[in-house]
Length: 120
Image (cartoon, rainbow, N blue to C red; front, side):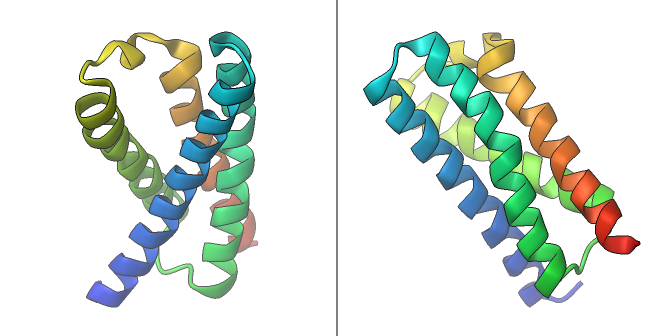
């Protein structure tokens, strides 16, 4: 796969992660932790549905399963490096199903489904 295609896919994933991070940041500024996590868990698949829709409408270089894996892999990697290591300096966030694992699963699922629908 050409480097340009990889950069495009990674850029979409990073934009999605940043929007999820903004959602969480605004949520924590306006709400307590649990409601902010609920909002984030709802917003994450919505954000990645839109991001995936843009990706598949204009690019779609990768199969749905690959795109879903790349998108969620980038989100996990950035959460580990940026959020857990650099910001929180701990990995407690990964103990939360609502805070991490559910959004990861929903990001994967929404990205995969958009990719499959784009193939029809």
